[in-house]
Length: 119
Image (tube, rainbow, N blue to C red):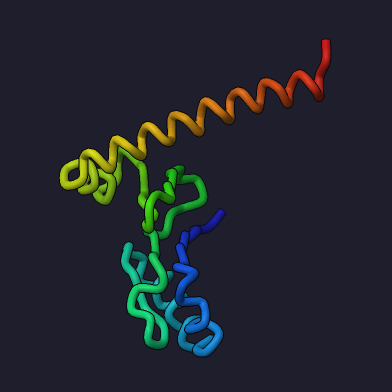
């Protein structure tokens, strides 16, 4: 298994990717090689792409899209710790949303299992 890098592209700048595809491709490759969380722009859009830290395929983490951002939610992450320390209310709001999603997934899985494996 190898490494994975997660990117979030802000759709309001998609025209800049279309207009500058080589610049976009080059910056994606540079971001993967750089291996640190950061943002980069393309064309005249300054913060078009949010780059998460590259992770080994066995390294589990959760990314949460909330508001106009994406945040890493991992108890061993400096980025998550910074979020807890500096934006506690926002952090706790995301935790609540994760819990809601988890409950919904469990409920859906239970229903799915009953349909697929009736007794």
